[in-house]
Structure formats: structure tokens, C-alpha cells
Amino acid sequence: MSESTPVASRAIPKNPVVLLVDDQRIVGEAVRQMLSKHPDIEFHYCQNPLEALDQAAQLQPTVILQDLVMPEVDGLTLVKFMRASRATRDIPVVVLTSNSDPATISQALGGGAHDYLVKMPSELELVARIRNHTRGYLNLLERNQAFAELAASQQRLSAEMDAGAKYVASLLPKPIETPLHVDWRFVPSAELGGDSLDYFTLDDGRVVLYMLDVTGHGLASALLGVTVSNLLRARALPGADFGNPAQVLTLLNKSFQMEQHGGRFFTMWYGVLDLNTRHIVWCGAGHPPTLLFPGGQAPATTLDSTNPGIGMFEFDDFEQQEMTLPKKSRLFIYSDGAFEIHKRDGGEWTHEEFMSFLSQGDVPGQHIMDRLIKHCRELKGADILDDDFSIMEVTLG
Picture (cartoon, rainbow, N blue to C red):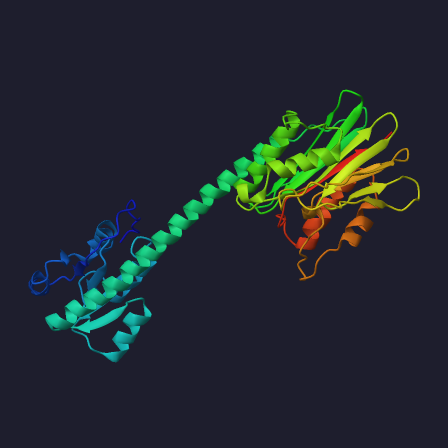
């Protein structure tokens, strides 16, 4: 008796399909006559038990009626084969035999049979058992089909998210070494968020540095982040002086009100650095503060965000701040996904701990941003973080 393989996926039947396995033709005819009075029940008969497994695999009945006492094949063994085969393991097997011994009944049910009938049951009882087991089996098939469709949908969504993450990453700028050093790390979450970052020079020797983080997850959040970045990259924000952070954020707030974008708004930190004077002007909107490490032994300070998020509500009073950076300063601009880590022990990593970690600086052969990613994954206890992880490092000469 060979192992049978499942046939190609087929439509779930709506009515009972019965396969009787019994070497006695008289039994086959008796069951056929009983079921012939019920036209919705499809009946098939297998006299040779050696062919039963293959026939069941091809037919895919909703119920298998099977004798135990047959030549060449032990009925209990056949039940176990039905349960072991991928093609038939879930199909209800109802033993139909003349043996009413309790020990045999126990063996049959213990070996995988769903039910046990002693020959010959009444038509009423046989049909009731067939319908009952068919109903349960069809419910199982429908559940499995729903799970399979859900898995396929999730796989498609995962592929779309992966493609979206690659697209977002492809839009990020290349690290630069001159006229100042700028580098970054971007690690998308499983659901893909709306983080975006960029830097570009203005005509007068100033450099724009910004990062934004759209609320929520998924393609809609990512696309909103990309839309804003493309708008800034193309200098296509009408009426904007891109060297004036407060004005840029005010105009973005007017253009991207959350009720027009599915309830989504975004946080942002936007700075303009003069390379000749090291003077920086910035405006933050609901975004984490940028960290300034002035070099030497001086402690880190923050370039805070003091305005509401972009698009939350109408607001025309965005305020900017300014200062002159010390030589060899190091700035870290980042999203909340870089420090809001849900630790595997149930706790939360704090912003103070995040700052303390960054203050350690680089170690030979390993950049601090790479060490930070590794540390966050260790805290989380997983390679995939809950939110997009974005951080930009800006180092002055």
C-alpha cells in the first residue's frame, strides 16, 4: 500500500460525498440503496482495500465508511494509513463492521476512526452520521481555506511592505564626507512606518538637515513621508524660504492637515547649518530633540522641539531657535523608534539611557550607530523593532 499524495486544490463540496470500503458487494449494494433515496449524497464504492487509499486521495470524500474485516488488509491498519496520509488524514473515517467487541471499538477509535457503526445500521442512523461528519469536515475545510487565504494575503502584504521599505530606502541620500560628515542608519519595522530624512545644500553655503516621522504604520504612512520629502527635495513648497525653518514648517502645516490625510500627521526636526560660521537655526515640531555632543568632556545638550506636530491643527506661530555650534561638534537627529524600545523584560528604555549610550561614542571597528542598532535589538529580544529606526549623525570638522 503506497503513500498517496493530495490532488490539486479543488472546490469545497457543498454536499456529502461518501466512499465505502468493503470487500463484500452485498454490503456495497445495501448502502447504495439506502443512500439512493437522498439525491444530495454522492456515493462511491471501493471493493479492493488495497486501492482504498489511492481512491480516497483522488476522490476526496467527505466521509469514508470502512469495514475492519477484509482480505489482504487489516482494517485497523487501514484506518491508521488513512490518518497518516496527507491526502486523507482529516477526512472522517466511520468504521462499518459486524464486530461489536468493545476492545475492537476502542482500538478503532484510538487508531484514528471518528465513529463506529455495527452492520447494518438503519438508514436513518447512517444518513444522520454521514451528514453530521460531513458538516464537521466541511467546516474544517472552510476554516483551513480561510487560514490559507489569510496567510496568502499576509504574504502579499509582507511583499508590498518589503517593496515599500526598499523604495523608501532608495530615496534616502548618500552619506557625505565634505563639506561636513553626514551619515545615517535606517531600519524599517515589520509594518513599515513613515520615517524620512534628507540633507541638501542651499546656494549660500548653508546645509539643510531634517527628519520627519509620520504617525501610524503601513504604506499610507510611508507614502506621506515620501511625499513630503519629495516636496522638499524638489524645493516645490510654494512661497518657502528653505533657509527659514519656522516658515517651512508653517507652510507644511498648512499643506498637510491631518483630516486631509487619513488622520495622519507627522513630527519633524528641520535645521539649517551655516558651514562658514557653524551657526545653526532649527525648528522642531513634536519631534524628539536633536542631541549635541560638543566634543571633549562637555556633556550633551539638546536642540529641543517646541512646536506641535505638523498637521495636528491650524497653527501659524512656529518658533525657531538658533545657536553657534562648537568646533568638532557631533549632532544626532533621530526618530522615536531609535529609543522607544519595549524591552523583553516588560520595561521601557528611557531617553536618558539612550543619551547615555550615545555618549559612549565609537569603538574601534564599530560605529556608534551600528552599536545602537545592535543594542536596541538586544533590549527588544528580536531583530525586528516595533517602529522604524532612523538616526542621522552630523559631524563638524
